[in-house]
Length: 100
Image (cartoon, rainbow, N blue to C red):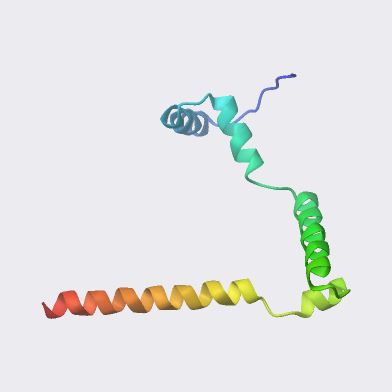
């Protein structure tokens, strides 16, 4: 395996070293893990294409990419609904706490 050097500020290096220490891994392993968590634009596009192809096979209908792009953001809407319910539940708990 080839190894290289990445230049960062001393503060950034120290911060990364502390994170690595807390996780019980080397600084190099931490950088590798952080990089693996951030896909490139090409990797995201590849994943999107694969996900759309899987959806096409599941529903048995050939939907164009343009039709996918025009479809509502169902998952995003579910997250919004869940967030609204969580906020409402938090407000209700806070109201009960204030009344006690």
